[in-house]
Length: 502
Image (cartoon, rainbow, N blue to C red):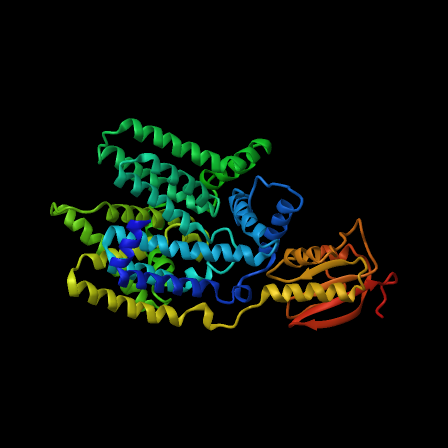
């Protein structure tokens, strides 16, 4: 503790700037969190599962389904949610707050690694830009399993770096745990396996470590830690005839349309993924010219590092690690033939921020300060202009709560059935709060009541005669009443055995 206090006293300016960066990161992620957070069907589904964990003590061994190939993630994110919602009992805002906290911690890791690798000013640049990145802010303000992927990817890189620096390869265990966690955030984090494998091989072959016993026992420890974190999913697969393993094998090796390698098409996709989806979206303020400029700067950083290597100058390990992370990450993503969304790049998005810091580190003195300020001010202006906080909050959570309370009131506290008509949503969020408020809807066709409440989020809505299962199974019905609740249409349907219009 005393060395830390002494360091703080000696570096008061740096401490003040660090506090400012983290205050900015926290404000961007925590401000009016309940108002801005997403709370739709997926979030409601997760909230129901957390209730089953905490109230019914039903521990899942499988996580959320993915969008392709009938693949399921592991349950690690659900366990994380359960911890946060234990302290703030069954409140979905707690899970969103956990993600926001992880987002701030990710900014810290960016600062820490850039500080260790490149120095103070590069760390300020990298962490500040990461703190205000609009896409990073958006994915730090809701509870969704892909959101912590950058944090765990950074932890995995940190584990290898710490092992290398300290020559204590037990740090590999941190990498094993973090890799398993990242894989359970999003399946495309599998691309981290060859990236980390190459960095591990570098330590074995290039560094020529002499502590082989510690190296191999620590590697074994990392593998065992990885298996332990993945164990629930493995047990689920074992019990269900290797459902997930077969789906994953089919996705990557089954000759389908989702993943595949073609030299020309893969290389053709790399520039667009790198510039348009990663650099422009995450760093370039979603502006073409700024995105192209930053892309060139990031590539210049790697090019200059390679040039120094060929001129036999000493090139630090961070450039090799960041180059490996970025290049293999982008190539790996390019093998995915379907549409690529922002969160697919979560496992690689810290790399270009750190490389911008690496670019600044090539200069010294006033030139370094000048370049850092130019980049920070220019990119800062474009990114803050795109901040999600400039838009009004969606208030999805509050609207769901109020609609659930309204339905309970209009039901007269009597049993009812429920349905949702929405093109881009499903009913889990409403189901969750109706259950939390003590009025869980009855399920058709086994428990048909004398009233059916239909929430309609579509512009045009006609619940009578809808093919929606929950409505069709209710039977012939007519509209007894209709309301507008916070801009959402709510219908009360009652039985109409004759089928004739009322």
